[in-house]
Image (cartoon, rainbow, N blue to C red; front, side):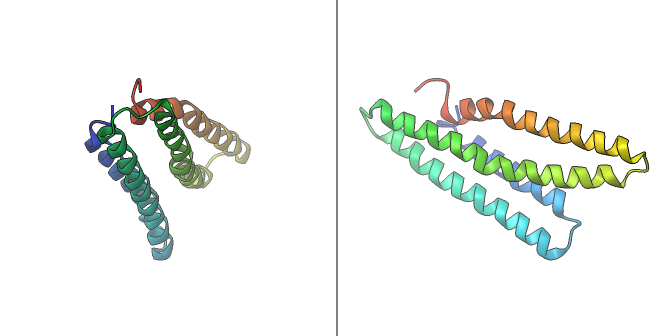
Length: 139
């Protein structure tokens, strides 16, 4: 789907960088700049490589199944490269917000464990959706 409509990939990239910026905007300046620049570099490198591979697949004729398998492997690996740092940032700042609350300490720890478990579940369930969206439904 995104292979033929790159606008959505760029829009998702903007959302990715924007969500990281919104999470870290109240931190110290060097943390804010470093994490936001890391997100920008990761997303721009992914978009560059993705555009390069997708343009190759769109302009080439009679490419074998191996080219599509390589593109699928690239998309699968890039999911973990992009979203593991994003979910680590979500886990760090979410846990920080949970631990600040005025509750029993054991209740805060249990809630943090469930929160991190939910983020791991999102990571696992999001991988097929990401792959289907970027690779397409069929070669």
